Image 1: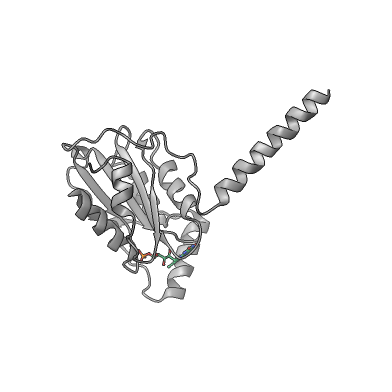
Image 2: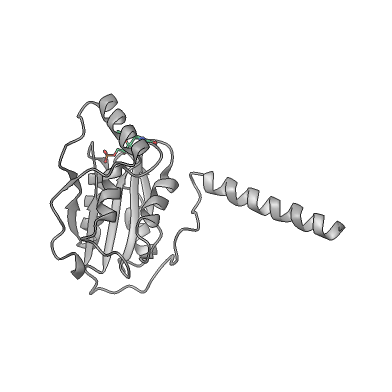
Length: 199
Ligand SMILES: Cc1cc2nc3c(=O)[nH]c(=O)nc-3n(C[C@H](O)[C@H](O)[C@H](O)COP(=O)(O)O)c2cc1C
């Protein structure tokens, strides 16, 4: 009995620590099956991103510059309001109601890509619904692709947003993601080298 109680107490401590870690903005959550892979120069790479005020676009461009990837901007048919408060309201309503906004354009020769970076800003603790529309689109099969999430944010919910991209691409091989605030691209090349996307 004493041992059982001790076991339960230890298990609770471990679970509590794990839960606490996942809330820590600085920690790596155990989302990714592979921290790293073998570098392979022949891989064809796509950087697909959604960006409202340009920060994620800046990061997407830095990733494309470092890797030679093609860029694809995820765009909604109905643009989001340019006013910040109005945009937050539309974003909240979409999230609360699970609305998948209709998208403009499609990726040409999606099947030809081996690696897809998927990036977005944090919106209301998670990825904007436009990213859900993109990742759930029947036109794209992410299974067996290498998917690498990235995001930009003001201060919170980086890990939750990276986790959402992972959740929305089941069957893919996920490499460790990256998040940054504003247009700070420090550390991008180190990250890409660590996950062996660049040599
Ligand atoms: C609708 C909306 C919701 C946001 N929610 C969050 C949030 O939950 N946490 C956070 O740190 N930043 C939040 N932000 C700030 C953005 O994530 C941040 O400014 C981001 O870098 C913007 O990227 P973009 O320029 O590519 O659109 C939000 C911004 C908007 C417009």
